[in-house]
Image (cartoon, rainbow, N blue to C red; front, side, top):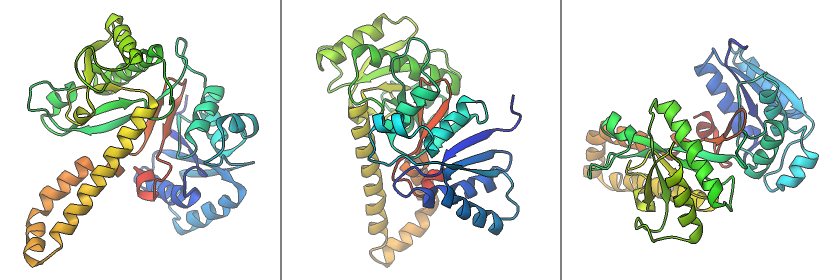
Length: 329
């Protein structure tokens, strides 16, 4: 058993590839010297790693292993599984499967990560597919219907949202499996025996939604291990009324990206308002401590990374468009 926490990193994944990953890895290695970072990438990236290591002579917790290939962002999962098992992504996953690393991080092709992850790590018995689960910020509800996290923190906290894109089409049985996965993760991380679970729907009434979501609700209600509390609408996702929110990957991915875009728009507009004239700049200066706290709570960059739940190993998927700061988080 490894005494040191080891993280495998796909250095080639994402829209910016190694140009975002390498600086982020150096930042992380400097902040967490007790963690070892094993980077995998095409051979030319090794020169960049060596140059970074020379410029940061105190770093000794980064290693690099060349890969034979890399998975393209537009490559099909079938192609990646057939031809790219020795890619940087594949080698990072194999590092976890062999026990060399405790987990891996990739900003690469989501479909390929799911396919290669299922091949090298396998799903737990009883699960047909893994799901992407992300921690999202949540604000304490004033209605009294709060998640366990909101009750504990008494203010801004978080919930768990899945699936976020690993499975575009889901069966009712898979949604029920995702509910169990999310509840188990929340139970471990939040030390709770009964996290609340809701299904994302177009209404809270029992008769609303498609036949698939209706069947999924029936399955969740019959699962005695779940603290299932019915439906939740999209405008309540960030209100802390549920610990675990379950949906198919298509709906979840759209909801996530729309909310992240809205958050960045609000922050951008606020900066614009506060910079328009001298009086507004003075107000911004006086409000800076409160604004910084508010921004930290809703900044989507700080919530980058989703667990690929259901695999027999820890895998974290970063946004494909993540810059070095977002990948560092």
